[in-house]
Amino acid sequence: MNLIKFTNVSSKYPGGYGLQQVNLLVRKGEFVFLVGPTGAGKSTVMKLVAMTERPTEGTVIVGKFNSGNITPKQIPFLRRQLGIVFQDFKLLEDRNVYDNVAFAMIVTGAKQREIKKQVLRVLASVGLSHKRYKMPHDLSGGEQQRVAIARALVNGPYVLLADEPTGNLDPATAAEIMDLLEKINARGTAVVMATHNYTLVEKARHRVVRLAGGMTVN
Image (cartoon, rainbow, N blue to C red; front, side):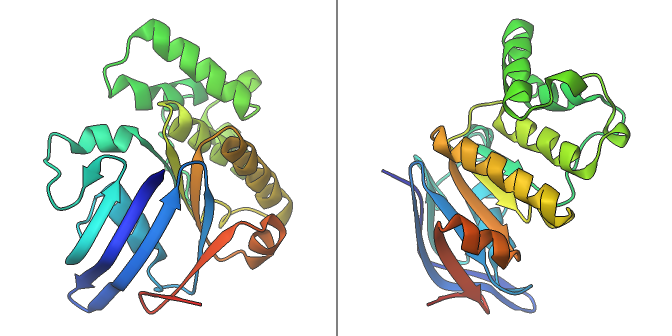
């Protein structure tokens, strides 16, 4: 089953192309690396999957949603199927760990009982149950990224988009985050990870999509 499908996708910006005629498939439960230099188009792929941007040409299909005809009302339902993790964590500094993760469910209108159950479950899965009342500034970089991953997982997404999730971390912590992503993938969640860290890519041995100048290259 295909979760993500790009068909002849181009994305044009005022200064040039972000992507040019890209074809891409990500299947259910797959782990895919997006690699390439800065400006290669990795982040553009992520934005097109989340449909924060639409392609200039071609079609992006994510699950049952098609970039050609998705409506504004459908966008929130698409986003609930995606978990998104960023390089710089993007945690709410005035809320503790529990509330940061819970926020992703509160905005969907989930009931408090379900929120508590899910938040405690995902915090346990990333090894942070004991830190649930800590504030972000009390955590290490690796712990903050684990919180961000828990937040991305709390709504049970089909695919996790990880945009340079180890970019701000030291090598040992980056390896721990990679191990966590591997475990998440082993439980059935597809992972699409953009990275500059070729050491992690070589060790993990998952499928690699290479981008350069907005195009896929062999």
